[in-house]
Length: 113
Image (tube, rainbow, N blue to C red):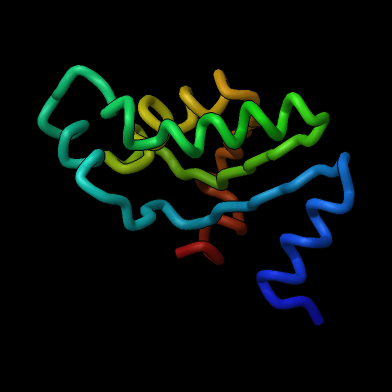
């Protein structure tokens, strides 16, 4: 069993790996950026995700892949529109592989609710 420190050490020791995050919620708690998005402001605050985006670039440059699969349902919630336009778009530009899996009307959709 690894704790967070042990996991970080293990990941740092392995120079190439894939990380996969599967997201199933239709809304995650986020900061003020969602409010800015909903008010129609120009775009995400550049400094808000700067460190995260640099980490993604560094991981990609080191040969590591960080993947996300997000099970979504249509119509998209305001949060999912925000996540795609202001979140995932920047993450993809920084090297993350993001896939959206539309589960609308499937048995999986019922299990996620």
